[in-house]
Length: 459
Image 1 (cartoon, rainbow, N blue to C red):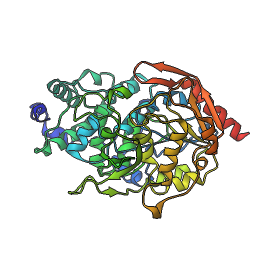
Image 2 (tube, helix red, strand yellow):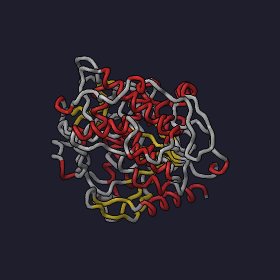
Image 3 (cartoon, rainbow, N blue to C red):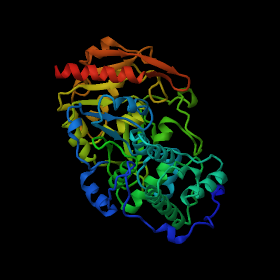
Image 4 (cartoon, rainbow, N blue to C red):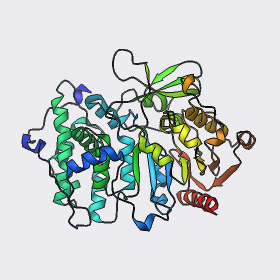
């Protein structure tokens, strides 16, 4: 890491690090001003990404809450908009890989990579400026550290070609937080920041979070800049400004610290993560449970118990459907389920509770069947292997009552075992094969299956 540090840019002017525009106009060009102080104060109480009221044209749409990570479910987000935009996306804040890892290492705070990724997928693309902002915030710097730092300075100084179709109000708003991020890095002279493969969206997000001292305010600002639909929510499962570390206990008693070490070990590399199941050595035994670990002090194996974001529980109580998305079962889905109050709330709802089964095995789920996925979700929500005073005893069908399964998937669908868990509604959905990650749901077919399920529920 140290070799990647090239020193401060001679072109950055100190005054640019502290200049914050207090208004900006939306992509449509119509005049509308937003005060940053208003956003910070209101979003800290609202605890979600968008404070606008839901329009009457969307009130007939079904409301869905999705537990997912920042990658796998992204492939169907665009298609989901055709069914409904009344979606609460609940995401973990414990990612410790790639660009996110470097930000957390130097500046601390929660991981924002999964949240940034979902916000970009939900962002507006209706105008050339909206597309330009999405491309800018989705841009990654080169892997070579010197080239990465050079390009970063072009972006933060406003001379990079990525700014070409971004109007001055938006450009200056985004640049202000990128410059603030740069300022925070320079203030930590004892830590040398590596820009290799860095995400501009992550840098913007981190700058906004530190400036406002609020993850919620940063999500709100990002959602306004990227024009996320007003009735869509991007919710961190834990609303915090602190660093969170994920841990897992294996069946043989082994404890592994860190999301990436569990799922996709990188050994500190800044290379893009290879999520092919064959790219990482198998775990010595199956994962028994997921939990949170201390990030501070000398005892880093100490278990901690963060509090769930209250807005997640509020949304769970009101939605028409709860979805457990496909993706990394133990490191993307379960971190949102093990928190006190989540199992209690889901079990009390009578709506469809849908598991989207993965199409392929990965390092976390090697050898698991469909009923094993259900068991893992049940154990996480019941907190089966945690504090016995906080454990629940709910059966699997209190949490999952429907499985959507990709056609020709690798995960065995053990119908009899599912039936013994009280799950009888198993629907096969068209799929396609991706050369890198294996069998995936066909987005149109998946959303149509969800639509059919919700229509039957309302009938």
